[in-house]
Image (cartoon, rainbow, N blue to C red; front, side, top):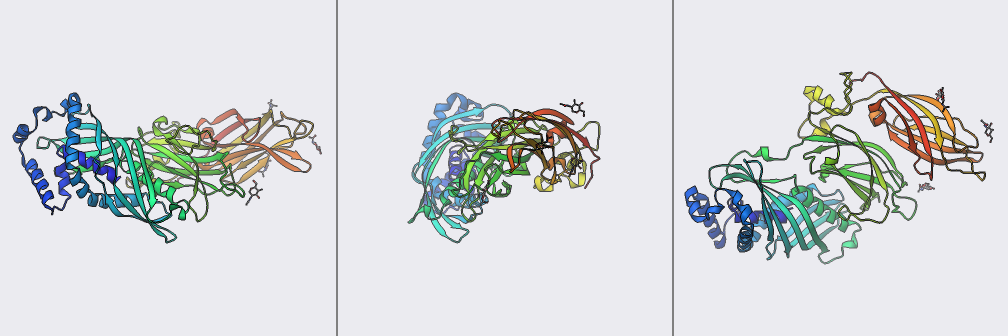
Length: 563
Ligand SMILES: *[C@@H]1O[C@H](CO)[C@@H](O)[C@H](O)[C@H]1NC(C)=O
Ligand SMILES: *[C@@H]1O[C@H](CO)[C@@H](O)[C@H](O)[C@H]1NC(C)=O
Ligand SMILES: *[C@@H]1O[C@H](CO)[C@@H](O)[C@H](O)[C@H]1NC(C)=O
Ligand SMILES: *[C@@H]1O[C@H](CO)[C@@H](O)[C@H](O)[C@H]1NC(C)=O
């Protein structure tokens, strides 16, 4: 976020970047005028002049930096310390202007507005603790700077909630350690030898801060403190953390090609969660999920709330723009819906996109934790079941059937095939069209093994109820008496209109003269069956101490309907 950006601008000052920085400022005071003159003189220098002033090894080859790290660090720190009072004074307005809209983009709906009423960076300058030059592309220079800041800034946020309560919240005791990546690109002959500077937080090692309501108690509004803290962390993490970068033009030019661009779409099916820890005293939690690749308000997706359940089934589908599959993650947070109050977090989980094979569906169960940064979490908060498919632009996907050119199933191919309604780069998610996959699902419920016993004789009278959740079709097997290893060997056919969004639920029940007891269930999407055509497998029963269900599933595709 901005106060961190302030550091980077400070760094910039040390290495000639101040030229760009100075342009933002409205110079009035004497001190600033002096600074501006120095900068202007600096900017007017010719290459030869600068050779005279800067030690040889500083110019023009930056690579020498790598052998002179100590020198550079000392040099940078001295400069930054000297410049800090100016940076502090000048940056406040700049930061306020650039950070307020950023913060607003991450503002959760429960907060009506979020503004700065005070912002100064304080008297303590950040310290550079490491520097390295990353060799590589000859058209750019990549520098990584580690810095540490135990600052005493004075930052007061004016927070308004949707219920109309306004309160000033002070952000105190900031402790930060992180590595900034600074890219000088394009390299040019003209001083200062680069056209623009991009900076980004490459790695955040530590970020601590405390929130304090000025003249009040933050607990006056339940959940606000956590919400605000999460918002600030999201904003810092997402708005400048790699691959997101900020671009500062130094020489005039069009640098839009340096900006982050979408490279693909992540398709996520939120299937279900199980054994969620219960947050409610009366009844059970009302869980819903928030999913995001980037925590921007308009790019986060929320599922429906499932009332009164610790084993919710959602069967919902979401798409996310991906900008850098090597570093981005899908994050999922599961909350208990508390109505008008801020929702309470049940747990969260993350999947790195680099762990997904492009174009291949991955089915995962993720363990929920309280905090993604604290890896060890003894408490069982439950698990969430997702199906993931990453489609980089311009690649073939898992649903491609090579024998049938019309059998193109992912939105991507469909969109790519219909040139005119192609992907709108500004909003690739909204512009996509969901494909329709039709077919006949033929399922043989062969048998079950090792079912839990329910009666005193150590036996059950099991039957299987088959539910297709989306199309609301149902059927059931016959009841078999007195067995824990029933063999039904019954086949059922279902016409499926929307295979990619269908969910198959098989519930094993014990038939009892006095009613029925659920022994366990299996939940699956049809993805694997559609991809493989035929699946013969044994599926463990969920929610049961023991038991497996043996199934034979077959998919017969029907011609695809186009719109
Ligand atoms: C919640 O579900 C349980 C069964 O799981 C039921 O006994 C209870 O009455 C439900 N409570 C509410 C408030 O719906
Ligand atoms: C199963 O038991 C019930 C009574 O408990 C009986 O009515 C039914 O005929 C039995 N079914 C079979 C297949 O034996
Ligand atoms: C299921 O039925 C088929 C014929 O309908 C038969 O060939 C097969 O052996 C049966 N399987 C079992 C396990 O009884
Ligand atoms: C249930 O399955 C049987 C056997 O496949 C079939 O004859 C029957 O029509 C089905 N019932 C429904 C409601 O689909």
